[in-house]
Image 1 (cartoon, rainbow, N blue to C red):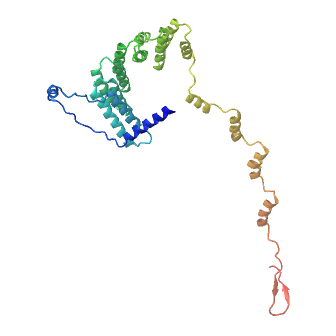
Image 2: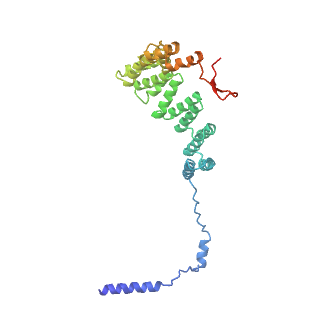
Image 3: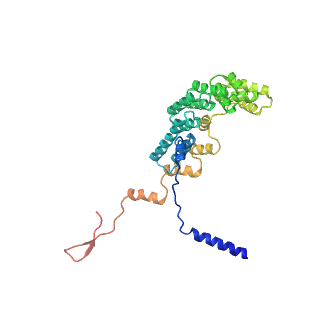
Length: 330
């Protein structure tokens, strides 16, 4: 207990001594000897912090995400995209070999359907990074969008050459070879990243897409030769052997040209057959062709055709004599 009291008393004294303390900066005198020693000492230079290209890429992505906001109007979206472009270009300016900056800038142009400027970006990127497979592959994709198949094949081929075991690059390269009319070369490329049965099957599917049924059968048979139970090849071959189904338009034409049956036939006959029922015959024939027999119908013509009957006697007053005589009809 005695020790605790001493401890609290010491803390109170320290607190009281700190009240109103002001920190002062004082200059210390330097002796002439020390001045002489300090004349050859240079001021330490602290290098300035420079932003990295990844920083500008991140800010560009943020601006680009703002442009994707549906609440932003078209004019505001264009402002955000333009800001993103500036940040990507700044990243390239800092590091001309920054592959990601080139890709982001090209993708920004592609989102605006500007394949020309995107193509220019990749060409500049490949001048700085000719050994990057992704740049060659992306260049091939852009050429595909521009419908330039030969240029696309060159890009895919270079990407496959730089990364021969990349399945994605090899698959697209092989399929585009098949599309370009080089199915056997396509099988060779595809076989580097998959088994030969699947390689022949993928080429067969491309031939089926191009409506080249004979080549499709040829490569399906090659797939089944490599693996007799290849399910995909079996299904596609069975589909080719089935008779073609009647097109929907042809079936619709036949539906309206064939003779009516069932209820449709009964409806047609009802309107074209002669009246046979009592009700229809009575209406169509008897009612309009028979002589009038009903009292109402007979009385109307009789009323106007019968001879006039004797009219009632008309009283006549003789002014000469105060008597009334009946005048007989003349």
